[in-house]
Length: 609
Ligand code: AGP
Image 1 (cartoon, rainbow, N blue to C red):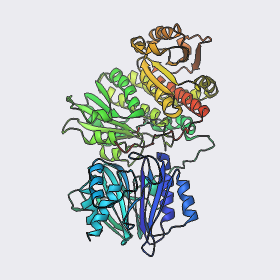
Image 2: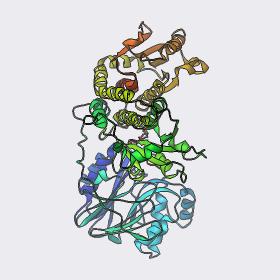
Image 3: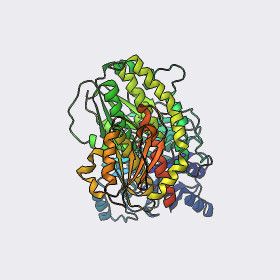
Image 4: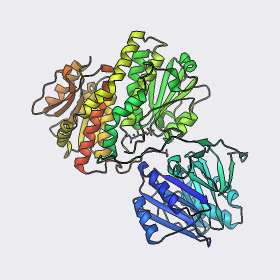
């Protein structure tokens, strides 16, 4: 999604800005741009549709240099992907703005500004910001005050950074609803929407709070909060090494990340030393909070939401406590009945998903006893704003399709179920069995990865299909949901998942010889029921692709393809079967020739509503 990088220094910053954009590329974008103020106080601009490499090429052909600048990768919301709609946007050839988020009242502002003679060069909501700012500057309002007056006119969510040719040594910025972090250097200061973009130049960061405004020079930092009071935000040193995010010999990041799962799962588990789930894994004070938990409310989006759906089965079964799971964009906008002693659990790979963050921030007073986030990115907004934190150890996930983040989230949830369960109905013996099962997980996943060639063969049947159904029962139903999401997002095949028992209540009408039906069918207690559902498909000419272990006793024929899964403890089957479905989606997408790591229209981190 959109990314911001800005710098003001005593040295030339164009390469710092470009490197920052490169580091944000994995988030997904469609165009990129950079504006600099040169030594003669000219505002210089490069914008390109497409990759940062195109921008680099423009810079190589016509080098622009300057000590202050802003840069951006854009993921289209208002207006098609194009060079004209790419940021930075300029006004009066003196001021330039980059923006993440959405300005909701942009239409009325656009009309007002047009009435004042401003000509719009783009279809973006952002362009109103730069003209408003220009208008203030032309009225001789001081630069920082001009930004304050401008944002007072805006409704919506934003992170904004601006430069002005007549204030060449400054960058001003504001944050409301989209993340922004200051990178503190020696004789230079930086800004970015994600600290990762700046790890090349500093390890000292100030994470801005909602409503903060910044006025910075190379040796000067001034931050005001939403009320206009001058504030000193804490500087944090982020010392963890930046992971190398190369392909490591794999054809795609997604494939690499699928294969990294045994390691990621083992590191997330980290149980070697104690053979216990320590409350402290969830943060200081977790034990005292867990003692009070009588119910759990999980809120998340996309794949992370599916992790929550799997977790509900564990939390209710193992702990005997009620658990609700809801998509964040729905949760945040509805009136909710309270349940005493409820723990709010948000789940997010990025820790920056706008709807999930808004759900956390929008909780009612005393609605929950505490908030816990399961996240993969340290220092992210959800991590900083939650009471308790479980950090998954998936490592950087670059592919837009979430794989190792999902399976490590499941591990986190199973550990949460153990931690809460021993306060309720989980016996010591059952706890031991669960931990033993968790220890088997990396090996079961490794054995699933060895089925790669078989799954690839199976995938060939999907290449010419337009639709697919995924079926599961019980805890395998959310696994089917996740399998369908993976297939649709990277192969663009329309895929839907149903609880298998629902088939005859509607979706069975879709089944014919052209409809591949994928079934998640481990030999569990619902298998016999599932088999009847699969018969319903078979007798209507549907082609079945059944993922089943030996215990399931599934027999294949010309219309029933059985993929023999490794036998593993029932409780970890959702993780293991998910890995097989990830491989299925991957191979279908590769053979269809789609952009596997950056599927069309999608972004890695969804920081707008
Ligand atoms: C999954 O493959 C997705 N690309 C998407 O659904 C993702 O899980 C969702 O946007 C939530 O992201 P988060 O985990 O970073 O909050």
